[in-house]
Length: 305
Image 1 (cartoon, rainbow, N blue to C red):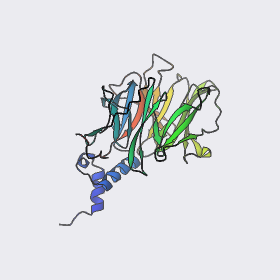
Image 2: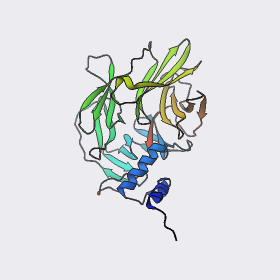
Image 3: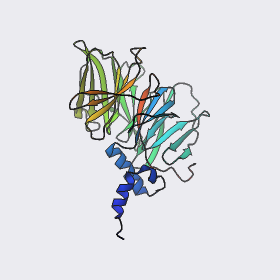
Image 4: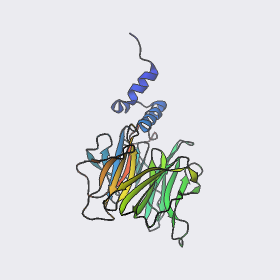
C-alpha cells in the first residue's frame, strides 16, 4: 500500500481541526495556526455587551453563540479573569488552562489589559495598564489610545513592543474630518486599521484606512469609503476579510447615537460596494466585538485541563 507523504498528511490535518487536538508537534501547531490565519478559517467573533462578559460566535456560520468571560485573545489562547481576580490562560480547542501568578499593584482606578505574542522570545505576555482602554496586538506590539500628558486634549496611538518592552508613538494619516461622529483603531488582516464615521453632503460616510508598512505614516492607504445615505450615525468597525478577500465583515453599533436600533453585522463587498445584512440569533442589543482564531498552541508543562 502506498504511503501518504508526510507533507500531505500535515496539510490534510490542518483542515480538520477536530483531529488536531491530539497532535502536539510544535511545527504542526505553528503550521495549523499559520493556515488558519492565511485562509481566514477556524475563527470566532467575541462580543462584549458589558463589563468583561463575552459571547462567542462561530465566524464560519455566524449563527450560534455561547457566553464567556475574557480579557483578551491571541493565537487561539484566551486570557480570562475569574471572580477571585485571578488571571489565567485557556485554549478552548485543546481545553488546557494555566493560572498566572498574582501581581496585584494595590492601586485603585480603572485597569485594562492587553494580551499578545512575541515571536522573537516565543513568549505570550499579559500587559496591565491603569486608566487606559483594552489593548490590541499588531506587529508584535500592544496598542492603546492614550493622552501624551494629563494636560493634553488629544489622544495618540501608543505601541508597546513586547520584545524590547519599549513604547513608541504611531502617527495617523493626514486626513481632514470636520467633527467626525466617531473614529476607532484596531487590526484587520494583520494590519493596523483606522475607521472613521463623518458627515458629507447630508450623508453618513464610513472611511477605512490600513497601514501597509507598520510605523510608516506615508503607508496609510484608504481601503473603503462607504456612503450610507439616510443612515443613523453609528460606530462602524471592520472586523475581517472574507475567505476570498473580496468582502469585509463590519460591526455596526448604534449605542452612542440611538436607543431604538440594535447593533448588527453586515458584509461589505469591496468591488461592488454592495451591503448584505447578517442575521445572528441570540445577540444582545449592543456589544463590542473582537476576532478570535482557534489554534493548538500549548500552555506550559504545569497547565491544567
